[in-house]
Structures are given as C-alpha cells and as structure tokens.
Amino acid sequence: MYIPPDFGTVTPYFFVENAESFVRFLIHGLGGIERLRSMRSDDKIANAQILIGTTTVMVSESSAAYPPMPGSFYLYVADADLSMQSALAHGATLEMKVQDMPYGDRQGGVRDAHGNIWWISQRLVHAAYSE
Image (tube, rainbow, N blue to C red):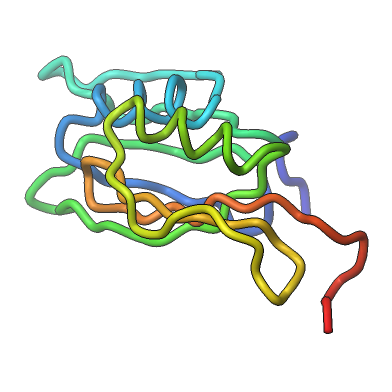
C-alpha cells in the first residue's frame, strides 16, 4: 500500500460552508501550508490540501450531497499558549483555557467559525502516558 507523503492512514477531510474562509483559518490561525487546490465550475473549492505540522488535511466546499459536518481534532503544537492566541486572533472562540492536564499535555480548546473543535495541545512529558 502506498500513502502519499504527509498523509496518514486516516486523513481528516472537511466539508464546510465557505471553504475559502476555512482554508484561511487553517493557514493563518493554525499555521498550515496550502499544498494543492482544485476548483469546481462554480469557483468554489473542490479540494484543498493543507499541511498542518506533519499531517495533511483536505477541505471541500459543502454541497447538497456533502453537507457541512463539524468535527473535533486533537492538534499537537510546540507552544499551546502561542497557538491558542493565534487561533483566537483568527476567528476561533474559546472552549477551554490552556492548562496543564493530568495526562502530560498542556492543552486548551477552541471552536472555529465552521463549528469544528480544536484541542490545542503541547506535550509536556516524553512518555506515551503520564500517571
């Protein structure tokens, strides 16, 4: 089995209203890099591929066949406090303030303008689990 570079066995795929705005949030709010974009005949995004850290996510404009569907995502970052500030500055709303968690992460949560929740987490310990 071949999986392209920067893709995982499971790759998040977002169907959102106003995909252009969502792509901007992924880039400016979460530090993503746009790798590919294809457009539909109505000038809406058919597929955009955004690299966030080590993972590519895909984005499409929603339609009657594929309506908007929010999700929840756990995002590891180098600095949870700084990443939280960036997400909030680019339109996210606070779900949970950044704090040290008992399982070894420093974590907070935001909801983007499209209804997705992002758990922004910084690993504090070098272990699979913390007691």
